[in-house]
Image 1 (cartoon, each protein chain N blue to C red):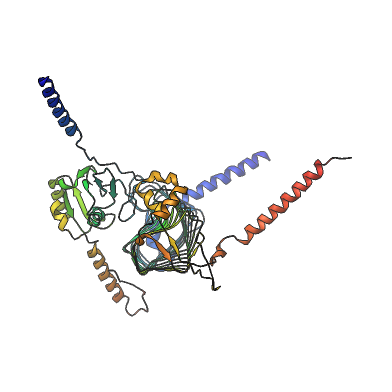
Image 2: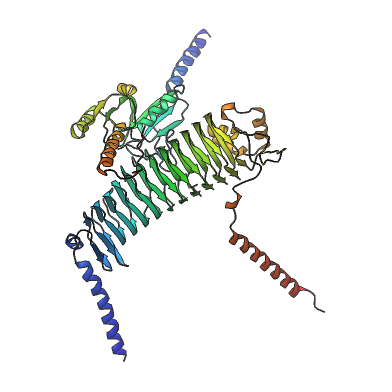
Length: 183
Length: 426
């Protein structure tokens, strides 16, 4: 009888261990549906391209974004939400990669959907190759939390300069009507 | 006699084909190069397969029946320079290479008019182009490329343009001070898509059956007026007009009807939203993260949900007409003494758990709404709702009314006639 209760206890422990082991949830990325998915921050349609990103919460709910900048904006606003995992896409293969394992390139001239100009790569080597060819700055996952996430201000600034030159070029033309208030 | 007729027919067909071939065999580029500055090059009716570059001040004009059929990796027409006019041309452009627009334009003070484009890719790419006039253009696509794609281009005017089955009708990025007047966009993704561009005028346009009538993002001091944003309900995320990151702008006298969400506004401040009519939308207006905006003299009629709002601060919402409001006017000034409070309770719980939509208008749900009121920051209050709909004139046109009169009279006569025929004869 004693042996039996010991056996029962032992089986229960093993059983519990197995159940808890199996119960470990995996948070896999959800495929983008271009027809219905929209960015939770900027409300634009999310295209299934190299700029798409995704957050999966512990309760299984997922959010998609059209630009990694929008995802960081969301994270900043929703600090209380329990994020299980986040994904970005490799710039070349367009495959999902975990945000924490990816390498990033910040490159102003490239146009991303919301002009945050950050690209993601599955490995550092590819990111470096991109920089060697087209320029930019290499960023790690840790660097991203320090990143300013400003929307392409430089480009706007350049444009301002250009407009100024154009204005001057036009001489004393009456009311060019330009409004360069671009904060 | 018969033989003679056959000969005439044969010669006629031959001359017609011959005529086409002659014009098609000559190099247009050579003719362009030979045209002097300020001159006009008239192109004869025919089908052309070559691509051309216009880089000096000339008028390039096609007579009726000029068609460019282009399968090159280059744009069919590239315009680069000043004071160039192109008009009267039809372009059919279906090619394998992506990202090549049918017409590419930069430079300034140019004019593009009376153009028809059938294209898989972007219709007209406008890059670093200023003070250019686009008038009477029709672009039909396959939903893959934008009708117009503007990049760093300012002070251009787009008028009387019809865009059908394109990706975005007008897409503009970093392009200030452009005007869009009397255009029509349908069956596309976004009718007008503004990104990071200030001082934009969107006036008298009709945008229907798109994912969104207009999507305006990152703008200041823009004006959106007298437009029709209707039937934009093709998608679960559709809206008549979406404004995001919009400041100090004016949205007035628009007719926003039959959309999933009429006006969707997020991250907006200092805007004036007046005299708009929101009719038969699922949600009339959905506002979040908005401050210092004026929302006056709008009409909300027959919307399933009139308004939903959160994170609003210091907004001036008054003197709108809400057809669902319980109003009472004791002093006869046309303004209700009872404020109108809109509780988005149902929308909030259904956004968390969509299946609850089954309980729409359920008595239990209404009871819950009364008992568990949403917190104050979610409730929109119009302090002085209007008693009467000041914007009623939009509704029925006179011709519609006349038609219904004629129809009623016709039916009365028909029924009298049937009674007359069917009565018992003695």
